Amino acid sequence: MPKVQFKMKCSRCRKNYVLTTQRREILVCYECQKPYLDQPIEDPRMKKLFDIPEELYKENNFLRHIKANYQRFKTLSEKQRQAFEQTVQELLSESS
Ligand SMILES: [Zn+2]
Image (cartoon, rainbow, N blue to C red):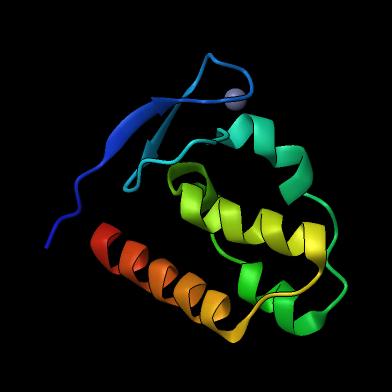
C-alpha cells in the first residue's frame, strides 16, 4: 500500500523540501543533515547497517533521522535498528 507523502520545507535552511510520510515539527533536508551523517562510525556492526546507497539517505528522511540519532547518542534500540533495516529493504524492492 503506497504511503501518502507530504512535502515540507526544511526547518533549518528553509529552502529545500523534504518528503515525509509523517507530519513532524522538525524536518531537516539531506544537505543540512549531511555533515552529521558523514561522521565516521567505529562500531563495525553499525557501520555495516548504515552502509547503504547514498540515494536512500537522500530520499528518505526516516533513514537520515535514525543515522543522525545514532551519531548523536552512539546507540540504537533493537526496534530502531529493525525499522531501519525494514525501510531499506522496502526502498530497495520498490526501486528494482
Ligand atoms: Zn535544509
